[in-house]
Length: 339
Image (cartoon, rainbow, N blue to C red; front, side):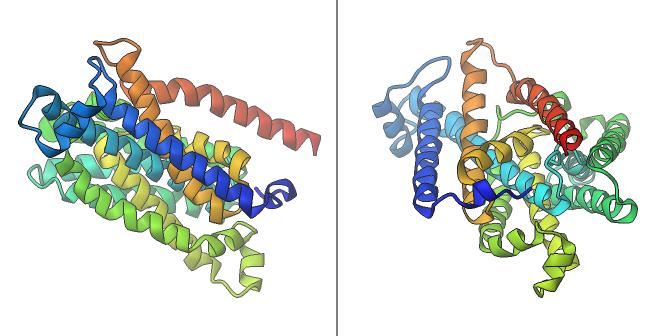
């Protein structure tokens, strides 16, 4: 996972790259508020924040576009950072929340929570975290118990995802009303997200992002391997569980309001490594900013391409992520044969 090329990127370049990514993050967020089937002028958008009841445009901005924009930025940042953490912990560039059972575990727990406590929206992100953590720990146990190859780990993750998806289908069979609009949840989308859904998820995501960035040195050491981490005085097992816990919080909380959106946690970390290098200090904030910009930007495209109709953003991410995953898989096989 490490390379001498990426570790030699000057700190000034890191700062410039992060500043550019911040600009892209803010610009995409602003465009998401302004554009849609019916564009809204900037002054009307600003007026909507201060007096939303004054105009229809103001109500659209405050109650439809603002929650959707925040959801895209927050979920993109969370899924991208969860992806890079999972890749570091498993030493596997093919790993991502959507490919190793983390997303589907969160989906199963969210469905179970909705079936048992349908009136308690605030409990869904916490239940999704537990389900995501169960999926992540299961994959980690497979990795440690079998010494599985990179491809075997991905196949095991897909098998676990299938088991969790079957569990969701069973819940829906017995409690059909547990997840209203489950097809939208399974595909993944941001339409209909409310601020009430975002608040409990944000309470989990923002501290988890901050803690992950504070632990960047430890994550760098962990990525060198268990033996070297222990030689440097770190408890590798505890740190791996903590890192997986953080990734599970991030992915589970995001899944609780955006559904099973895939490939953000796979594509964005690889894109950001090209820009920011392998060191977690600049890589994690780059993934947070880049992930938010990518997901929010794709959601904006989903509103504009077929306007006034919408294509769920999960479909766009799958159309982009599927070929990317195949390319990455072939690249890994090619690298192994060349070695």
